[in-house]
Amino acid sequence: MTLEEVDGCSNTDKKMETVSQALEELLAAAQRQECLTVGVYESAKLMNVDPDSVVLCVLAADEEDEADIALQIHFTLIRAFCCDNDINILRVSGLRRLEQVLCGGGTGTEQPGAGSGSTGVTTITTTTTTSSTTENNNNNLPAAAEPRDLHCILVTSSQCAALDSQQALQRVGSYCEESRGQYQWVPYLSLQER
Image (cartoon, rainbow, N blue to C red; front, side, top):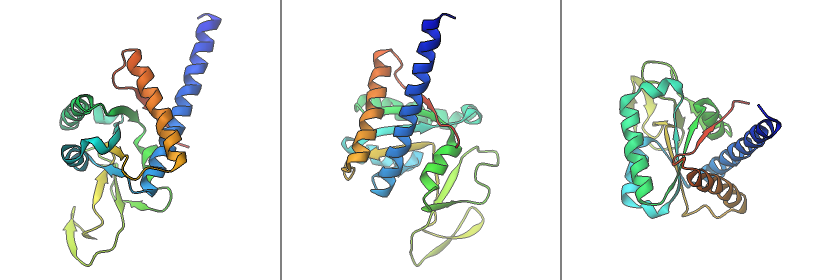
């Protein structure tokens, strides 16, 4: 390996770290501003109703999720829809870090059994108040405490006006654009646990 190759690798690593931090900032800000849609089904519904409001699609899967054929089919359909509608797509690994970012501020709690089991689906439970109660996954949970998988996350533009989230969105969007320029149509990031 030459000095140029070593230097190029360290620059790439720094860039990936910068983009990872920008993505984490963007997701946290979008969640605070309520312009985040989480879950494969919920994301598909939103893209069908209002695709123009979506500015970023994050597809998250760890190594064990690669064997989940149903999830991979959903990802393929979502990627095709995003390409047809000029929506930036980013593929990430590191579901635990993603869960930390989205649940770290006390906005949710991990559901019992999340991340374990045969499905490989990481779930979070958000708490909002409603008066009804239903059975959910053999646990008595309030109806509003619905588990949400983190495999597909959409950032919408309707309310994301804060300067910090716009800068983070620009950095992530630039990374996606640069990657497409290098024929990597769905850029990849690995989120590292901290």
